[in-house]
Length: 547
Image (cartoon, rainbow, N blue to C red; front, side):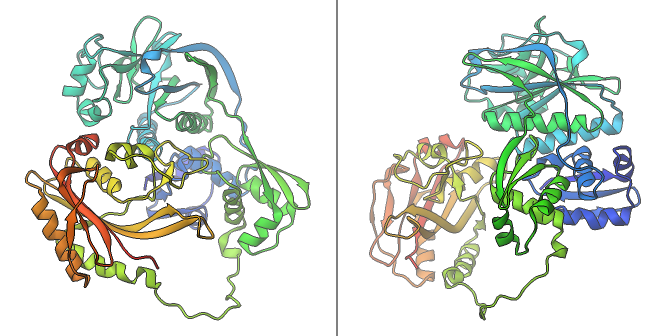
């Protein structure tokens, strides 16, 4: 998780003048972990669900509410800059979404430039999935001219000087030779054209998601900036833009919007319109465990930098700032009420029902499985239960079937609950292609199937999956591995041939009549290339009996 350094002097300049000792006590109550501190600064770790706190300006804004210096929505005026951005249809299949904003009256020095770069990279990691979903560019506005165009060009069609370089290069050369190009080339390797943002005179501002141009490099003399955010997920793009713009506005920056003209629609960005949600007072009482009056809840939400109005004895209307992308449900608002009330002020109660704690039998076998797998030389991973149809089905060469889908997914890569562990293993191998071979990984975890005979219409199933990748990985190796696992678990190892779309025909088998079900074999070359892997992969998946 991101760790940011907050200097006490910076907080003071932003209007938060409190002692170091008081700050050290307050920050954990706001949902952070303190890594270390000294006489000058404190290093703080915030959870990824609060990217608005990844800058000192965001921390100061929240602190002002927590200690009562300011309450309610922070007011940000957005002036129309009159500038336009034209989005060419050539980027539709590459990175179709873009948001841009202007911030004037900024003040940079060496320290502030470093903070901005760190903030940008933290957002790349937390929201952008290392630039895959969202990429950010921040430019010196005063050296370029509107209107701007976002388009895709051929690999050698254009030449420009990339950031921290002293000569011009084509996009293809950047991907081959520039350090940032080499690092992020995989994001564009499937395409025969590369995105560029250019100004009225054809000057290149940026090659998303790789690198900015040297022309628009920020210096301590920069006073007006242009922010671009591009990506594959429109919501994430706009949320990221809102977070950056409002962060600069906290240090007296003046926000201006641009008109984005896309082939199918037009929009103004940034859009800082507050979201509105309803909150039931009874739910606050039920979840937190204390009875709070509606007016008290309104006051606490004001400290959380939200506006709230009592609609009735049991209903409050809440306005949520555009930079608070973590507020998805009523329970998220209730969490903010609890934080502002202060968890230390909530007295714990012993449950009225006497219970004796013991390990859940459902998980007893997990430790045995882990011991066996580690003994066989495997490394454990833990992937998310949420995945997406592209990775779960299409990349695995499987036909889509019934599954538990997310009604309101926050991103396009988390749209369903997994029914298999294998694609999670392959995603891990894809992200660790730079590591030495061989790699042997496993995961023991739960998947969810639709089952209308159950009260919840779903059935939870425990699975174990493993994968091995190296130049000589083969069926014999994975067969002996699975045999060792089955026999160490106390089952008999019996198999028969299986034709599975994810595996090479004739090199896949299923477990037979042993109380377990499962399969193993050599993954199909198409599956391997779909996950951008370059070596043979053998894998298995075992399903355990239901509870």
